[in-house]
Amino acid sequence: MASETDIETAAADLRRWLARQLEKDGWLRSPQWRAAVEAVPRHRFIPRFYRESRAPGVTTWEPVTPETVGKEEWLRLVYTDETWMTQFDGRDIDWADPKPISNAIPTSSSTLPSLVVRMLEDLDVQDGMKVLEIGTGTGYSTALMCHRLGSESVTSIETDEGVARRAGHALTGSGHTPHLLVGDGRVGHPDGAPYDRLIATCGFRSIPPAWLEQVRPGGLILTTLRGWMRSLGLVKLIVTGDSASGWFSEDDPSFMIARQQDAPESLGMVPAPDDGTVRKAVRGPELLTSSGSGFMAQLAAPDARFFSMAVDGGPVSTFLLDSVTDSFAVLAPTDGGWQVRQGGPRRLWDAIESAVATWEEYGSPNTAAFGVNVSRDQQAVWLGNPNGPQWPLPS
Image (tube, rainbow, N blue to C red; front, side, top):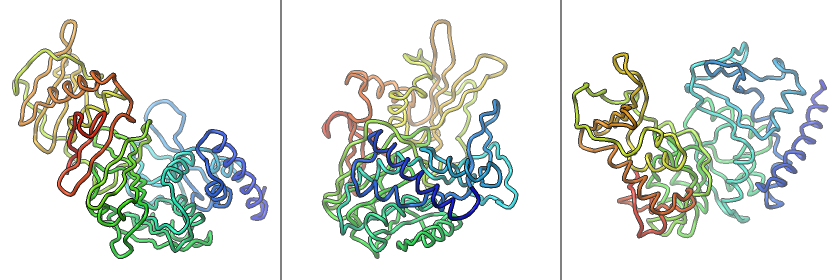
């Protein structure tokens, strides 16, 4: 397979195959979005990308280009249902001589198509609607929306100038001309308001107030809420004037956090060995990494992060540090259990154990049992119904 014509023919076949798979798996549910998947050339949007190496040891990413793996394998990978990385640490890649990358944080990607189309289906668009997209990324999802609604109905904001420029070239080359902006997605684009739908392909700690002002009453906001420890999940909110409410989805698709929402570089102050007060812990640090209890821990301690290390040659302890309030909790193993040492304005482990106990009282439900209320002044996640237990989102 060498000529451009051969590549385009093979790509069209692969798109049809991908659409059939997505439909069979239940992600593609409407003929309009199926037509978009079959029409939009994903290979134009990710001409080169990185995949995770299977080699043991430190996480390493290896470049995938037509030159490194061959055109056929490159094209096959493009049209598999996978997320491919396109940027690390906010820096552009030297594609003239791409090298494996280790010890780096992915900062831009092409999300797996099943999640892209699932969100687009959930967006519930109708002909003639205007959509604001937060996070253009490679431009692939932008192109799908342009195919479905027309370029004039789509506005997309990307925070990274280089990422936005490459997406713009790919979109133009594919015949799409949406309104593209470089800026802070939290601000939205008031000049284009009101929008019928807003979709965000990066995670936010809470719902930016500007979104409420720019989405019309009755319109939808679809975004991932996430914290500094983990993703909370995908929420679908209906806007009613200057407020919005809705529910989490049943599973937990995780997007990179919006760059303006990144955690501070410093984790916070590590407490001295005799700081704080000690008690027996009801639960150990596994709470932080299990799916349901981890969700509750993120709600209960929204400004905290954790790490584990051995202290003075002793056993491994888990440190939970809140860089906003300088609160801390340190969990250390004891005979037959754990003890926790806490200090600062917030008793972090008390709050987490309480939240997890409440969740268990409700039957340890999945995220679909949780909803969100958003107003100008406050935002909270609730369990069961809007009058149930609540945890405020960071402002």
